Amino acid sequence: MADATTEPPLLGHEVLAAVLQVREGSLQVLLWQRAREPHVHRWSLPGGRLRLDEDVEHSIRRQLKEKVDVRQLAHVEQLAVFSAPGRVPGPRLVASAFVGLVPSDNDPEVPPDTRWHPVDALPTTAFDHESIVLRARHRLRSKLSYTNIGFALAPPTFTMSELREIYSAALGYSVSSTNLQRVLSRRGLLEPTGETTKPGRSGGRPAALFRFTVRGMQVTDEFAVLRPPAAKTR
Amino acid sequence: MADATTEPPLLGHEVLAAVLQVREGSLQVLLWQRAREPHVHRWSLPGGRLRLDEDVEHSIRRQLKEKVDVRQLAHVEQLAVFSAPGRVPGPRLVASAFVGLVPSDNDPEVPPDTRWHPVDALPTTAFDHESIVLRARHRLRSKLSYTNIGFALAPPTFTMSELREIYSAALGYSVSSTNLQRVLSRRGLLEPTGETTKPGRSGGRPAALFRFTVRGMQVTDEFAVLRPPAAKTR
Figure 1: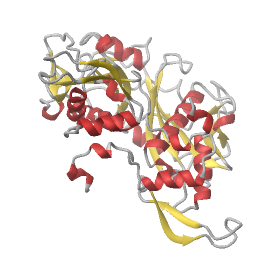
Figure 2: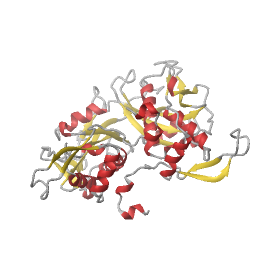
Figure 3: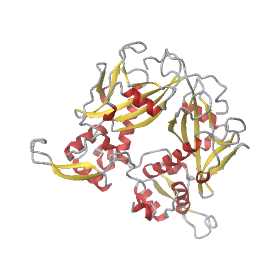
Figure 4: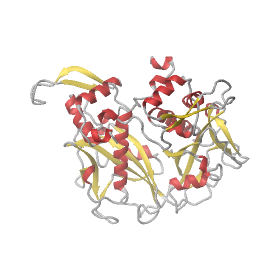
């Protein structure tokens, strides 16, 4: 820091987002196909250069607007900085990567160069974008266990069978509705809406509808047992 | 990204670390006092400019060496990017901030301009460094609940009374040894070494010594109950 004002600027900064959604039973990521070199025709994460008058959070929301209606993003958070010296050809470029989550009941309009791809079967990606996508999936999977982040992948209300499909797709293995309901209810994350599906929606008997109690990120497994008595009653 | 090679570089990139340790019963952070403008005499996080030939992880370890023996860092992780346009005077500078943790039985030698400060009673800090410190504390507190990160604050072996003091200082409220032992044991994080303290160490009867089962970050509360049977037996 001492030399902050004396050294010349040596590099650029870009923001990139791995926008994830559960679609057709699998976790998918939004990628656009590059029309120009470098890495022409390869698939890229949406994003671009940080402007002088914005921070990285504003920048990623501005740039995502070009690819997707950002009101459909239920959650956006910083993922990590990707800064290997040779990560892109040409002048040094450091990337601030984000994760964005779209609830499964949305189907955002996307430009012609942009498409959803299953994270399990990525096409050839540009630069280090595949490792960013895989890191984003890892973050999502970890947070499904210790936060309420599932709210950002789920519709406002859902049956346990629908939620089970979303969690199974995101986690990469099949979970049972019964266990899922037990875990999420015990943590106070889930509540019944009091309504049931209309006949036909799930193909069988009407099923109970649920919703997340909070739509906004919370760590759900804070050391509750260790908290002081005052905090417990909040 | 499309314009990566055409726009001029507009900014610099620095790395900064909030190095935290429980000392004398409180969570403290390592700061050095600036000898020059801007913000002369204010207290700063260690760090400095990213070099062309290094990524941010290598850079922070290189720069921390000037302030502290980095072998004493039991854990280092990316915290967040701080990128508000006016966060430092002069040319734009984006910061990649890290958290570093030092076990409580170490007392690193530090240079004359550098000192530990309780996070609860910070001196006047430079730039946005106070908000970085507070964000680091928040990250540590969250991770104490859903990971085994306590290993990086604790000595290799400890009594429950010693560990209780470390957790209480880091969390900011008093926890009981009994609850702490129950929670950490239930999660398989803690094991008795089979030894006890020598008379005099804790001032009373010999106390049982414990250690963390794993020294290396792990999320401890992954959705164990939801995992497929094969994964459970690993």
